[in-house]
Length: 254
Image 1 (cartoon, one colour):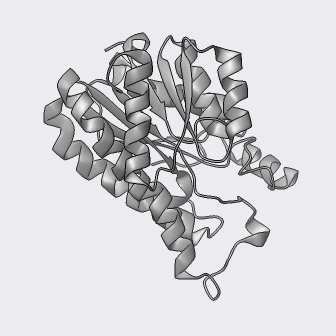
Image 2 (spheres, helix red, strand yellow; image 1 turned 90 degrees about the vertical axis):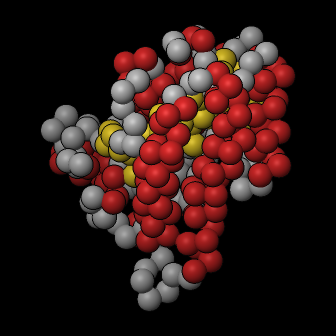
Image 3 (tube, helix red, strand yellow; image 1 turned 45 degrees about the horizontal axis):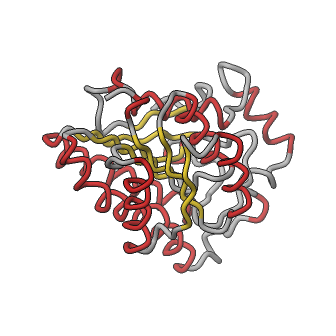
């Protein structure tokens, strides 16, 4: 299925990386359900920018199964077809500020639980809500947003990285089960992005240091990351599933 034939759900799709992913899909002709949780104004601005013929914004909490089912139903009602593509981008509240990170001797299990709920429980809910429509269509694309901190834990964001590692494991087990239904499940993992709300607290010298460490001598932008997400939704990736694509300017070799 071409991208311009797809109905796409982007969780956390109203701001930061999510907004870049929303714009990328809309640019290619897809219809997009923009899920927002606390970013109502940002969602309204995005709809006004792109247009109501391509985008609908719906409030929802990905950790609540009924709320996620309502997101999928809203997309079907608004655009007249099943949600065929899901991008699990929603991020529990988190700031990429290495100086303020909780270290091994102080971090509590509640921090892990919050990240696991957002990354793993959220992915499970969106998958379960979208599966009937995907199976009916004989087509589905699930793209999960990960991190290169698996391979390069330069900053010990213990809770965030552990949750994303669990999400990668679920990505691979889901890909094995859902492949016979014509559904692919992949992950796109970035490093620090320049710049999102989550990375706004990062000092400029850290961005510069990362840039000098990459073969491209640059820090990946949200727009560049979003284009990689498009690959996994496009026909060109139809034989690719269960994979983790690192998009960080070549900093990490997976």
